[in-house]
Image (tube, rainbow over all chains, first blue to last red; front, top):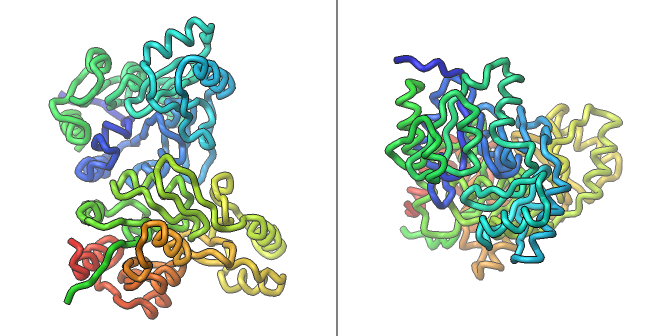
Length: 226
Length: 226
């Protein structure tokens, strides 16, 4: 059995890191062996993503803010795919019902990030009643994100694939959270690590038996990439 | 022989990274064993520093922008110690003589970072002739930095020591570049890795026999910290 994988997209927090968000060094060493483009895909800001890419030593192509921002070079520019205005309006609206604490707001260009201080479903219900149908409220496992409904990690991967001259189905994708669902759907092969959200495991093509970074190594070996 | 070290300040690029700026994973594992506060000290921006601290898994106390910014918590605020205005004026003045390319200008709060496109000494000479005596032009080995003359990594370490209730002389410091000189001077014990600038090696208390990340491990072992 041979997989024809020409690129790989990997989530950062909870996928290549431990729960405390520190890197699994064995996983870093494994990723460095890959001979295909590695796209880090995160809900975090572009500066976090590009720093992680540099420290791991992979290509500087990153998906940030859940697909709202992509970046091709460390010293290049952010390409902003999402509109932050409606997201900010939604965050203000949520203040009517919940304690709302914004995270990294000075750095976010396409979305709003909130500390997880209320129930996700209650937040979604409030936004639905408020008529906010152009945004989505998603949970990265580390924070909530109010994102432009038109952007996602999967759409960002399509954007990057085109730029690289690849078909997005030639990508494999590995993640752990609900915000990775469309990334795994969009890629040719979708892999959930053992600690992943139940929803992600249900839709993934492959679920690893090991957790986070160890699961990533297991997947890379299974795919014959290392 | 016993060293009474209660904290350690470590430069990032060229000290715990390889020349391509990717992390030495062995060094990361060694740093994780430390039982004392680890302060990462870099010429890079606060977002780069806090990301690196999180990925390594040390305390979130960081010195950024060559001491122009310090930060105590990942989700905390930048404490800006340097004034960027005169630095920007100096950068504009340098355009009269050299090709000037600013780096990360949207993120820098206390200094200006330039790609190394001219000779350092020629740049310094030009600034001297232009009467710019409130700024310094320094070389981190990866970029040039125009910094407020009142700030330095060493002064930032003093600031942090006070906050932590430590004497700055209870810190050891490890670096590789000219912009680490005052950090090593300020700390109780100053250590240069084998790949360090000659000037840094000359003033350091200890020079390791191994390069960058391997040198850091050698130093931590010598100090009895791991």
